[in-house]
Length: 342
Image (cartoon, rainbow, N blue to C red):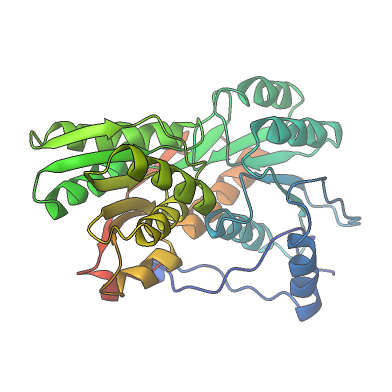
């Protein structure tokens, strides 16, 4: 389609209002058949192969590598990148989006293929910040600009991330307050990237400042998925019958943890997480929810800023900030009605 970015594999999350008007996402004007194609492609194997598209325009070739398109957070990032790159109707970008399903080796292979295809810009949400380093270095050596989103990876030209440590601390301070400053608490961790590490470190800082709190587990990895949250919460409840609180690495994991606790009849558990997702915002409006709060992120803003920085790099200009650190706020049962969402 002339005058628009080439379309790629992006499932369509339900529209959500932005946090405020200044950060409102750009309007999406793709035809219905494009959305249908996206939906049909999205239900297939996640990240199984690169989607390539012929584009006779003169715009840049851009590869967008996300951790898992089944997680709406990453779908919002991809959609924001696409809409931002589509603003120049005379210089349409050729965009290819792939999902690794939180598999670091798959993501490494996907970036290798992007290098082979000679894309000019890569925007990536790293699954494993360490594993991806060598391939990012290879991409940079090939003249490809690399912007990391959500988590840092050494060697990237720039990064757009939430202040994960501050967010983790914010979420776990609320966990401690809700528990009345005492009880057995566990952390359900996630993928080995800087975002997860920062969240856990921030949470530990908050928990260590509460003498009445005893941390009984920090080693379980829920994979940042709902199924992983169910699995690890089930394990925690079996091992620690006096467990009273959990910090989950992201909202999907927290929702899974809540499901497991409800199945076990443990409606006294308190759970906090991170993302401020539409699903958790909806859960917080239910008086029966076990989720007490979530430290927010804006995937729409993150995707927009990453694309803007990428365009700056393609012009041969350095970014104003090599690492753009975005703040987080806490959304709770008490303030969810005023929360604008993603």
